[in-house]
Image: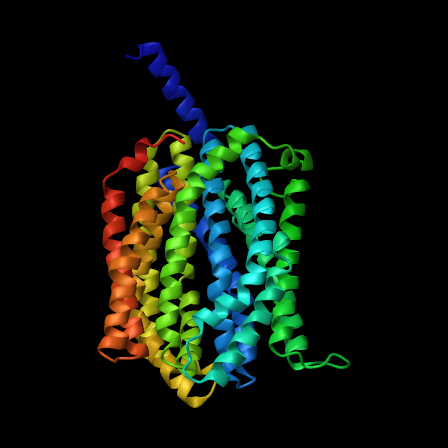
Length: 474
């Protein structure tokens, strides 16, 4: 039982920690949410635009095989991407908790170890994933036309190899961006991504179509441009930390000196996210297997619709970043009440934004899809899928915010369980039933996806409302 003096000390420490982080007050909370969310939204739009540029430019070649190759390649590349997203979440939760408590030395130490760990894992990713790219593409591409299937596999393999060549520089960027966001700095990652995106667009245009003495390299040009742009982003983020251009300054010695206790804490939080990522990727690979069995045109149309929908995630993503950061910092400041209030407000903002996005998709789905310049049959299918995706928007809005809040508290197991439930009971079952059994084709794919999002959101909300995240020790 605590004495009265001990309680006073705890209250005093909580007040000091709370005052050390700007914006953790009810009267300024809305401003803080948008200050965190808007740069994160812009950053993710720009990050998505790195691959969006490839899809848009390749679409102008009017080559369904190349467009399908981009879509299948991204499925494979997102396996690795999920690993580093998981590390970023673990780093963010620990850095935010330390930063909210006013322990800046600990925050710096955790960030440094997370960057070092991501660099080591990126090398392993290169060693493992480069040789497996072609066999994986052959397994994933199920077009009944053997000539079309072989061409998609060839182009996808080339694209993947080029992207992974710079993995040791590009993938740690996600971890470094997460560490910056944990301190409330969502602007610097946005600026880095802006620079990266501009370079990618100009390089991709030059290399895909050719300019002057540069020949038209088509999909090889898209891969080379994206690989170089992502590598530059990783270098810029590292320079930002080493020069102290964000809220934390990290020395090179901090990264090369291995501290097992910190690495263990990061991995403990990251591991359920890694498992969640594996679950999601296995589910998505199975999902893409179903889609690819419907033909190359359907795969190309699905890629366009996925690209459009990935842009619709941006408001929810940015607001989920705000929820993650504020929950982590508020728990570090020993004030779970302000964290819960932040999540409630963030969920409302996200729901409004995503519902409006859904309305735009219903009204202008065909016009949005037509921007990608593919063949007529592909665009017709893609426009239909975009319109159906409007059903998903409210669920995505809430699922991402509540999931972000739980991860910010260090609860990475609940989102993992939600993913497991979603993949097994919602995504695969619903998509297969509607697309294949009921023969609804791509419409069935997207109706099944909407069912998946709704189911996951319901489960995630229940887990958040249980409130166990408020007592977590990390």
